[in-house]
Every structure is written in structure tokens, then in C-alpha cells.
Image 1: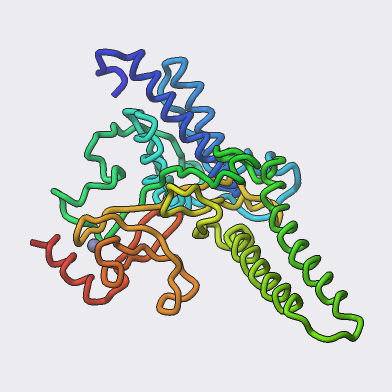
Image 2: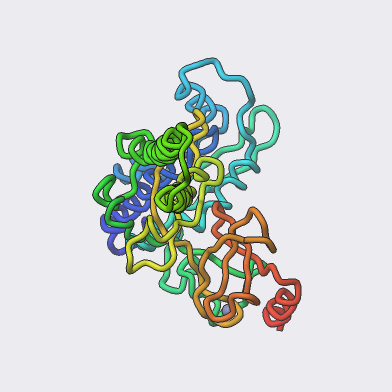
Length: 347
Ligand SMILES: [Zn+2]
């Protein structure tokens, strides 16, 4: 692929760019598990090789596992991940990485090649290769026009959104690691909310400790305290739920006035309870495979309790999709919606 190009240096540079995007992605979204750590090391090795003009190196599973073990700085138990696990991990996230490469106007996206070995001498090896990205790439989001729809109905894209002014002043509008002063300020804001609620009610209860007639003022204070508590509790909800849910729907108080839909997103890094990778405020959205209107995430409410779902802006009650934050895909949730999509694609 590299040899045939008329502009080998340019190709090499853009391939290094794709690898660097992948490395940064693995750092912010991948986590510190066995597979992402090993892949990040493989990406580093591939970057140095491609920069030198060499072919992407192949590494076997055992040495990749050793890299992960050393990165932990402790004798870890467990076994090296097997080839199919690497393959599955990569394939679930490849679409997201391709989208990020596209967003950076990178003409290439890396793809993981797993060569399954057999027996003791013939080890399974891993290497990165490159796939050219075209404008009509499925990761682009509007692939539903010409080609048959795949068995997943919908692909989600991720775009950054503008946080509310108070949040921008506090932590800025760029994504940041949870383990930084910005991350602690964000998590601390939940504590401040709870503290304020506690303080307000303590003062109120203390003011009633002496027996005296109930006045209109008392009732007003009670109402004010209730409204303020509810507001603060609701304000902090997306941040409170974030460690457990990874993606939460942002409320109006967290987003700028011009923004209609947005979510908080952070992927876990698997180290400690409060460690996440990167916190970002984004909009997950897609193009409805039925009517081509935009699909945005909302809470599942009673019907799909405990889930985030994608609702079509033109048919919010009918064109409803699931949401997979890793694969960035959704399937139709209304049973009668599945049939037409399948029928159309088989024709
Ligand atoms: Zn629709």
C-alpha cells in the first residue's frame, strides 16, 4: 500500500496522524485494561516504525501482555487475552475511532490485523494496517441513503457541545481528565450542592426549635427551601450518576442556552472507584434509518426504565432506538419497526 503510493511521504505522515489519533483515543476512552494498554503499546511501536518508513511491526500476545503487566507495576494475576478477545474489543470500538479520524480530516484509519496462530511455536500475532477513509464512509453517519442498512439500525456520532457559562468559567469547555483539578472541581460541585441543601434545612429546622406561631414567612421559607433543594439535586444528577453510567443526559442548567441536546461522557479506566478517563460534554446523535430526521438521546423513562434511548425528532414516540455507548450503535426498540428495515435491505 505504501510502496504503490505516488506520494509516499505524505501517505506516511497521514498514517502517523491516524495512529496518533488512535493513541490519544485509547488514552482518553480506552481505559487501563489488558487490551487497551497492549494496543496502545502496539500503536506506539507502529508509529516509530511508520515514521522510519518501515512496515508496521507484528507483536505476539505474550509480549503485549507483558507490557500491560509491567504498566501495572505489580505481579498481576490472569492470563494474556486471546486473539478473539482482541478482535472483539477492537471491532466494537473501530467505528468510533474511524469517526474521530474522519473528524480530524485524516484520510486513513488504522485497523487491527489478528493472525491466529496454532500450537506452541506458532503464536498469534497482532499488527495495525490502514484503511483509506472516504467521504461516504459508514462512520460518517449518513450512509443510510444508498447502501443496505446493516442489522443495527442506527449509528451514533459524537460532537462536542458548549457547556453552560458557569461550567465554562469553572472548568472550561474542553474535555479534561477526571484526575485533574478540573475533575475534582466537577466532582466537588456535587458535594457543594449536597452541603448547601443540608445547610439550608439545618437553618430552617433550627429556626423552628423555639415554640412560636407559624407565620407566612415560615411557609415561604419552606417553599423556597424545597424548590432550591430540588433544583440543586436535579442540577447535580447527571454528574452524580456519571461514575456508574458513563453517559448521562445533561440538563438545561449544565448546557449553554443555545444547546438543545447534550450528554456528559466519561469512560472508566478500571483503576479505582473515582477514576475515569476523560470527561467531555458531547451530543450523541444519529440519522433515523426510517425517516432521515435526527435522532437524539433521552432518558428511557417508564417504558425503557434505566436506559438511555435515541428518539427521532420527527417521530419521537415511534422511531425509538437503543443506545450502545461503546459501539455507538442502536437497534429499533419498537418491534414493528424492525420488519420494514430488514425487508428493505434484503430487496
Ligand atoms: Zn424517524
